[in-house]
Length: 396
Ligand code: NAD
Image 1 (cartoon, rainbow, N blue to C red):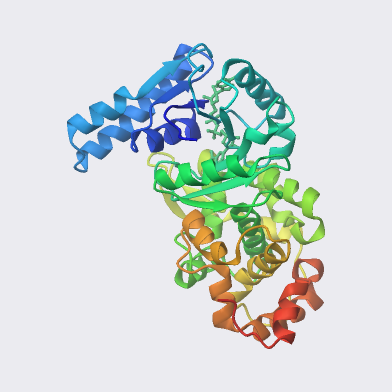
Image 2: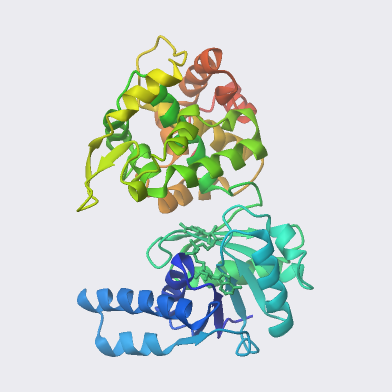
């Protein structure tokens, strides 16, 4: 099936940038929100992004053509000839149920429904409709017009045809379109969660300061440090995601106590101008690490730490271990794993490449040693052990 017309429901942060990704590849899109004011906000975002593309060399004519591909809407009356509808409404099961049922009533029987949910079950969302075989996760990253990755996530009832159409469509958008089996937080955010949590534990152990941890991560593989990123996304958002992962995966995702303490003290990061770093009240630019953190660490009491000196690889070992669990569960093709993490997080090398550089036998020795000190967070993935028993020292 060809997608000759699409719709995006929800014109907020994700919806408006997904719309730009669509129109920049020539796909006409109905952009729907609850009322004219919210639709206009979405249109203003699209206008701003097109203007910035014109400033960078896009011809005014092409920009005008793209702008004309957007059809604003406050109801579903223009959804009758839409081939793919992507919902990007807030992360509430009730809201998404209502939107999916409205789509079911207004779209033709062949229309595919994509959901941009970050955490809800695709299978559960599909079951709200009369067409679960046509419901699929299309997990774009923020901002969707720039970020290269889309995780394409079938639910239990999603048909192979729907998966193929979705994968191909996202490729046509110029994205790295990766099939990911349904699991909590999907692929990239699941691995990312282990890494950010470990950064917070390391900070809480008191051996390393905020900037040192971030600098070490950036020097090693990352475009931005985990603690700076925690501040960018907000400690409150981080805590609810961390609690969700803990609930779904158990002890190895146990959130660092420091995170709840940051939320309790309203040190949410950039939005409150105080977080792991402090920010200038006028310019909102980062000034330096937050002096309150030292007090909080004293208040929380020292965490047990290993007697080994901090080594940047410790930050990545939980991510590597999780990558082996993901491989074991066949969440994605092994060859897709590193490219997905690189495209989704901007890593310069993915966790399996890092593991191969460290050497799988060394990874296992280090993980086992850390497991003795920190427990479940470092219980070795059975598949990692098998690789080592098989004397495979690298993955690729
Ligand atoms: P947002 O709050 O910025 O935008 C949501 C929009 O949906 C709002 O404009 C709201 O008015 C609109 N809306 C609410 N009910 C509606 C309805 N019935 N019909 C039409 N529009 C409706 O939210 P967001 O950050 O864009 O997130 C949207 C989805 O994308 C969520 O499921 C979120 O988990 C997921 N997601 C977000 C990010 C991110 O970084 N923001 C990244 C990946 C996925």
